[in-house]
Length: 254
Ligand SMILES: [Zn+2]
Image (cartoon, rainbow, N blue to C red; front, top):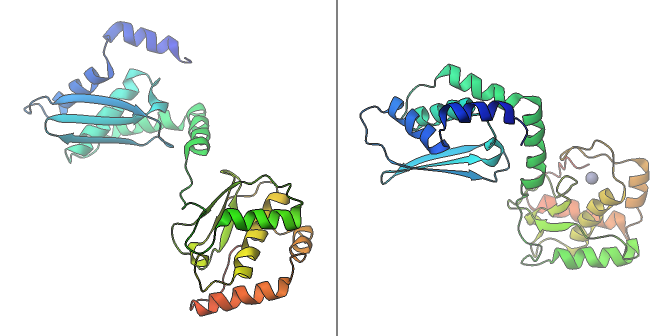
């Protein structure tokens, strides 16, 4: 553990468990209420979120495990923030500020960023759609254009049928997601293949500092894109599909 110095002193002074901290703060916030059973759990969240609920005389607190090593004054500040919120009381500004300062410390921000990357799950549907199987689409394109040498990333259909973003490659989570609007009998196979091919080229030609949304198409990329068999027809079919869907093809991925 890193900040042992302070923790040991505090632990020695107070000998308070996390549940005892919540019990003490509970009595401060609700002096006349019966003390519920208190359960505090550390969860592997993708952020520093905390949840609190009171049901059947049981107070359940779920805190990010990133805060497991936080010193007790920070735990107490968070307990105050959560319990006041639970009981609809105005926030204690000092506690809130103290807690936020702790989260904003450089090393905490770094841990949060890492954890977000590692744990923040991309949400998408499995690649086997109703009409198209993205694994098959990928495998065929891989054979045809990449000598079967491209290691497959995660593949999936978007949860919402976006017509503006037909596909994207997320380098952070190493996944290609296609809009589930394309998983339809209306969507010509060549259009689906072309969107997948486009995203595969993003793996093939990674750009530096590319955010999740922004995507850069270098001249090299565009040249490679034109290698797609019948690439003009593919674009046409794609545009027609979008028009049929009643929307303009305003893909930010262009
Ligand atoms: Zn692109």
